[in-house]
Length: 363
Image (cartoon, rainbow, N blue to C red):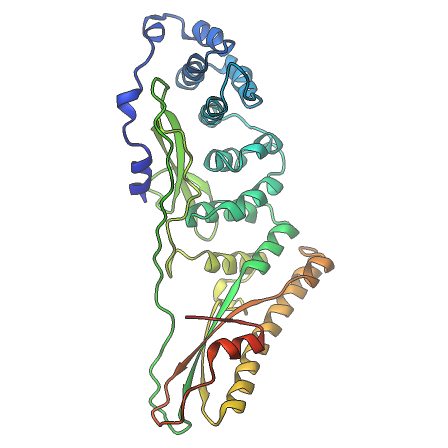
């Protein structure tokens, strides 16, 4: 987990030389107060860093005002964005409770810092967290936000879970008299992602960047839940928050599985006992194409009936409005495995079969 963070935090020491004024100052509070009121972006940056490092709590209101900065003749847009990332880091480290409506504008640029502050927002962070959830391409970030939302359940969260959950239906087709039927199912998927990184900010102080992990040994707890998430902080002069970027998923780190667990938790049952399974396997006896299609339709109908019953339960709990419930539809993926030993010809084309049934063919 730390490998990606290490890439982001490279080369910090080479560009983080403190200005001489800081090294010679015997009263950092006076210097920080002065520089915070200047238009010089680098002075402002070092002042925010001083406030965080020296815990100059009397200057917290000045740091909070940085969040309201906008670009001007004196401050370029990238300078403003970098200063605001520094300010968010300082507020996190100084344990300041920032209202969620103040954080709303930073969900795209600074999602990691926003999650950290949303976890201790003084107001209801649910709307803010719901904005973050679909942006969380990283598995760990998604679970961090999901765990926090689980502490503040809302119809919007339930609607997201029910509209996002996917059932993968894997059906093996066998000769009727064949009793030797080995198992089958999907394999694993591993992905990776790379993105453009802006250049280092030479002359600027290092900024704290946050990342999320499932390892309790890596850092403090951020969000408890079925799969607790912990946070780590590193410093870099490359002012870019990559905490929400995708790093791939597999059969263990699976957002769909977490969606199912969240729904089960909200229904007060264990995932094992939750009736809707995200992976369903079954066996079909081969007779002819029309019978096969009818059998597949029955499997699909069963999954949709289970889903509709769950939607109805959430509606009765007032965790879903009737309008939200009416708009929901279960996403089903279908895969057929030809396990016949006799030559009966090809199975019906999966893509055509899936289209007729309103499901998605799986590769």
